[in-house]
Structure formats: C-alpha cells, structure tokens
Image (cartoon, rainbow, N blue to C red; front, side):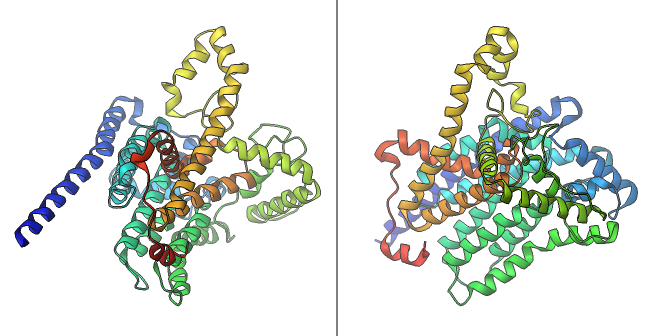
Length: 457
C-alpha cells in the first residue's frame, strides 16, 4: 500500500514537472524570438514615447552625477534614467541595448513565474491560454524592446500577485515573510520608475494583509510593507531636495492634469486649446506645479457638466485601440504598428483609409473597446464567484487595473497608460473569453464556505 502511494506521488510530481516545463517554454521561446529581433533592428533597441527624454536624463546623470539639476530629471521622475545608469555600469556605450535585454528577460521571467503559480491553483486549466496571450500579445510583449518603464512595471505586478498566490497556498501567517518583503521591494522599484503605482501598491498590500494575516497583525504588516515600498520613491524626493531644493518626486502632475482639462480640452493630449484659467504666481517648479493642480481641481468643481464629459472621454481613451479612428494616446511608436494589418490597410490606398477611418472602422473600434471592458469584468466576476484563492487573485488583478484607469481619468486620457496593467487586464480577459467559449471543461469549482470565511473577501 505504501509502495503504491509512493508511486502515485512520484507520478504526480512528474506530471507537475512536465506542466511546469511546458508553461515555462512559452515565455522562454518568446524571449528567444525577442533576442533575434533585438539583434536585427537598427541600434538593437526602439525608443518608446518618452524615449528621448529618458536618454537625455541619462546623459545628464552621466555628465553631472546623481544630483544633476537637469530639468527633465525633476519634471519626469528620475527613476527610470537612474535605472538606465545602473545598467550602464556594465557598458556605458551599450546601456540602452542592455536595458531592452534586461526588460525582455524580466518580462519572460515574470510571465513564467505567474502562470507557474496559477498551475498550482484551481485556475490551472487557464494557464496555457494565459501564458500564450502574455507571450504573443504584440503591443505588450514587443514593448520590452522599447526604452520605457511600462513593461517592467507590468511584469512586476504579476510577480507580486504570483508571490501572493504562493504565500496564501502555503498558509503563511507570520507577520512578515521573504515573499512579502520581496513584493514590497519590487513595488518600491515600480513606484521608483513611475510614482503613480504607489496607489496600486497600497491596495495590493491591503488585500494581501486582509487575506493572509490575523486581524491584530494587519496594521503592523501594512506599516512595514508600506514603509519598504516607500524607500525608493523617497529617494527621488531626497534627490530633488539636494539638486533643486524642493521636496517632490516630480513636477509634471499639474501639467498632465491641465492637458486633460479646460473648456477647450477633449481629455486627450492636444497641442492647443487645452488648459484652465490659472493666475500666474512666483515660485520654483514644485510650487508652480502644485498651483496648477489646484487650478485644475477648482475648475472641475466649478464646471461639473464639462468635467463629467471630460472624465467620460478620458475613461474611454484609456481603452482605445492602438490605431484607427478611435485611437487616443501617445503610442505612435508602438512596435505593433510596424506590422499591424490594420495600419497597412489604412496606408495602402485611399479605399483602405476610408475603410479603416470610416463608419465601419469606427463601429469596429468602439465594439473593440466595449469588448475589452466587458471581458475584463466577466473574468473578474468568474473569479469572484469561485471564492477562495481565485477570488483573491481576481480582486487583486481587477483593483490594480481599475486604480490605474481612475488615475488616467483624473489626469490625461492616453491608451499608453493601459500598458503597465495589461498583464492583469489580459489575464482577466482570457478568463472571460474562456468562460464564454470553453464550456463546462473550464468551469472553476467553488471553494468551500470555510475557505471563503478565511479570505474575508
């Protein structure tokens, strides 16, 4: 009897090992393809939407040191240029090539780790479609070869949720663990290269603490993880204090909010006609930025009808296609557009242009946006009703996506802001699609009431 049990365990272990190998093979093969692409494109990297600004920031750091007074390093957060500077230790002349290689490797590792953790849950049936869409989605996957923070942050989000899955599954209940501290460190880095992710980090640890720690431990757990997450963003503040004598992470929030506000604004980036009335004041960049933010908030309060219209527009623009009549944002350098059939049709002839940008193209674009939102919602609903760990994964993924969507509504409508949460939105959308087309085979068995009570969610 014992021998049969041992053989059964060995067979199960071998089966699990085979599944792991198959799941990991998908992102690793995609990484190999990217390395081939990197070796064949001019310069061996692409510039993202703000690529020149990051490169100029890097050059200022190389020239003047970490406390450079270069305007770009205070206007845009200095985190990503500092990340590039660290990578340049290996070879200054090849910094950007090293960056896209590292970004691609991080994304591949994150994708493999995430689906590997899913394979040990009741969501194991979804692992292969999730792994495939993360590897093959052209916009998300190819942007690891572009100079920009977006895909690294997207990778970090799924690593953190993967760590949360493992910790919940293992029943970890002590105040701190190496997984929670690693997650805090990763989210600290993500907030370092893009400070708006601080909000997402706080919510993730609220969910983590509420579902794995005893009530009396939760305040201390949150305090410590929040403190660790704040370390690197606080470093940006200290850098600006030393370099510019003002204590802020960056000075572009007011400008970004103003671009999406005002009587002539559309909610998207436009070159003229945007902005709210704002009396000039004296002061440094931080003072000016704070004043402009207050002007925008005051204008919204005085113009609620126009504000609602702009909020709606920005909410829509966040999910807009990468090209076509409904596209809105700063993704003109999207690598996908180099090979997109839609882009080729639009530029091949006048008839093709009329098809893409005419009534039919507008209808398809709006249906596409609606489908993205509905499928994400359906995926979330599927996980939520399943209860237990599936519910936690769904809440965590959905919360991060919605928080960043709301931040876009409060600032500027730009589909590029969707990139960092696409690992999570695509995951939920795959769940939604498979629920529609997969039938009973992909039905998630609900967790017991005992598990539901333990999750408190």
